[in-house]
Image 1: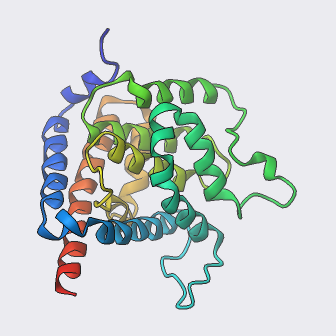
Image 2 (image 1 turned 120 degrees about the vertical axis):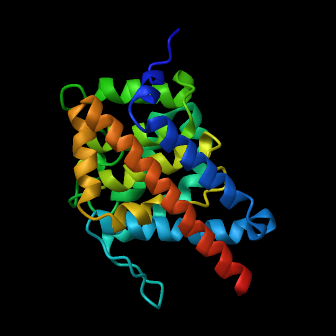
Amino acid sequence: MTDPLAQLLDLPGVTDAVKAARDAVGEVHRHPTNRRGWPTTAAEASVRAARASAALDGGPTDIPADGEVTDPVLAGALRVAESLGLLLTTWQRAPLQALARLHVLAAADLVPAGQSDLLGRPRQAPGVATRLDLLAGLVAGGTSVPGPLLAAVVHGELLALNPFEQGGGVVARAASRLTSIATGLDPKGLAVPEVAYLRRGPAYPAAAAAFAEGTPEGVGGWLVFCCEAIVAGAREATSIADAAAAG
């Protein structure tokens, strides 16, 4: 059977961008600090990713000195970040179940009082369930494209589909992060592309909107954009590892 995503590699600039992303993350994993001390650097990367993801959805980036996080968006993003290791196997075998759990964690403090039954349940809009099923099939082994490409597709599709009423951005970026880990692109979760998305400002939602339009230019632009963010996220990871070595 033909791989449903294989043709995306033929879009202008995509193959080179994918290679650059893979090379950058591979280099981070070879950093001397990450050979043995990767649990520490991965933990810092996870927190930075959560803070950036929360900010992209309108939350703050700073965690209070006393550790008491009251902002619902940031609290949800941190809960999601803490769960990724536990959800990895579920993501690989039952992606929809993992998405539901991510939404429960991300939106627990965002849904209106008395409507907790909305947590983990996609919107009942035309086409949502079908597209989620198709995406789940890709994640669960329906494609063999490189990790950077699949992570970008997962990310873009979830942003475009917006299957949940609250917390959708945090869920989309977490799902992309899970994909990077699951595909072996970034098995230790060291890179922090979320920081790059935040730093790119309006370019991030603009690229996502172009992907949602489905044109070759829009899709290709988003894939390259995400790969560039992975490269930048690898630089962020290098700074984390350097700081850990110095400390």
